[in-house]
Image 1 (tube, helix red, strand yellow):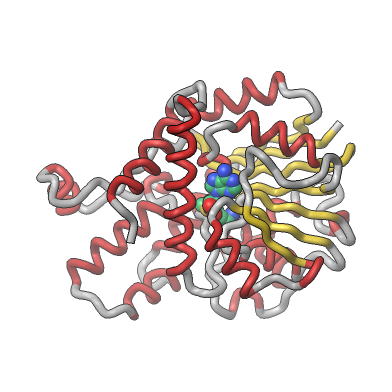
Image 2: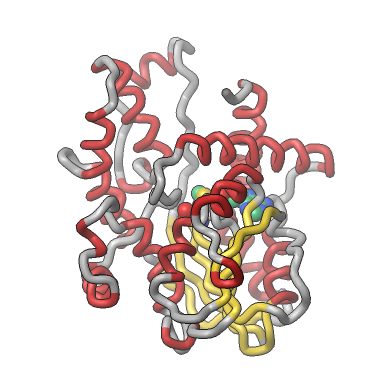
Length: 318
Ligand SMILES: C[S@@+](CC[C@H](N)C(=O)[O-])C[C@H]1O[C@@H](n2cnc3c(N)ncnc32)[C@H](O)[C@@H]1O
């Protein structure tokens, strides 16, 4: 279980990072407490996640899905609603030279969670050397125990702001829905520039508050070594994924319906998951009874930040 203090340190930290334009928490101790809380929360998630599940809100583009199906026939039939994998597909599809250009290359994912996204990509890109890095040690241990395959796919524990890799050792660095939890976004982007080879590509996908996007743009304008070549607002495709994932009768709903719990607890569990997986961004409003319980302080608020856009941004290492 997560101590209430840990949950509070995490939500306070995420709020501060995404609503304060300076994008820094105050002081080393506060940053260390936040990162430790973040690792504990994702470690707990790793222990509860079903095999094959990813941790992002998803992306939906029917054309991309058809392309994935053409590469992996039957892909959408078994064990996935496809949306989170579509985010990963986008990360390598819409970069210079696309998926084909990744064959045989060194690919690093920073913030890989339990590794399922990188595992999915390893089925699409022949002969690449893929490494996933994550802050949460149990997520990494699980990825190594369940998915790792020698040099082809390996996972290491580490911090996005201090990458344990040599200078100029990576061809493509992907980052999917993770950087909104980094206290030092500039530090991460500096590290990305350091580990990428000249001509290497950073493919960055994440959700932004107004303040965080302004901070990102200021960093992009001044940070040497990365030439930003695209910035696509993919909010509509993400909202489409969230809505379909949460719709009555969806795989997500059916999985919840299989679990034994009474109607009230099911409503609370569903609400929590919808709030966590992009519901408010896609227009979901909490049931009145949940709002009332929040007001009466019977239930802590699930908390959601005013996220304004979801973006795919690509840079080339100069
Ligand atoms: C929302 S999850 C996304 C995971 C994965 N990219 C996916 O789409 O399934 C965010 C991930 O970022 C990781 N993370 C947060 N802060 C990090 C940091 N400073 N360094 C590396 N990983 C971090 C978390 O542990 C978590 O696994």
